[in-house]
Length: 169
Ligand SMILES: [Zn+2]
Image (cartoon, rainbow, N blue to C red; front, side, top):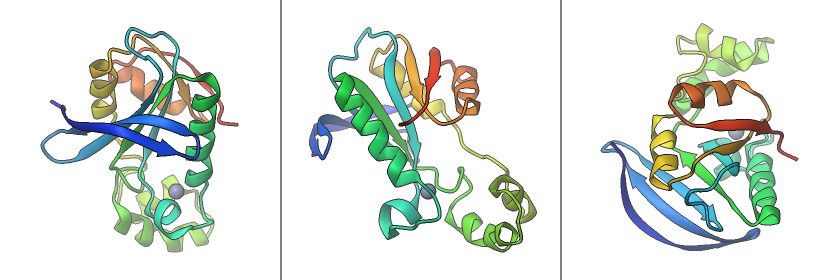
């Protein structure tokens, strides 16, 4: 079960968020919250898994940075929302999996297939921490900020009330 360990205000390019750190005994997860979300319905929510390439090394091989910026901007415009960062690099397989899958990707396989050919799962992500954080923040339902619907299905499986998906723009 996840525990809330600490919080503070975090100033960003997209306004000030309340940053809340959670720990499940193995991994940290961080929520940044804007506005009054407690009891809220259709709260804008981005679940964002870690990406070393984009967030540390300015990689141009993915659009994780742009997705984070878009989510923060949409939440700032609405004045309310939450972003949950999860420590699950490379679809939860870890960064080595990303490196080992690269030859398959360069040969033309989609990323999910490339992971499998390298001996990993197509998608090993787990949203139970996110579900517990949303429950801890007492959010009644979310509008998921994502570019495809598959994540919403996985979140619903873990008990999160997802009203709909809204495309990042
Ligand atoms: Zn990325």
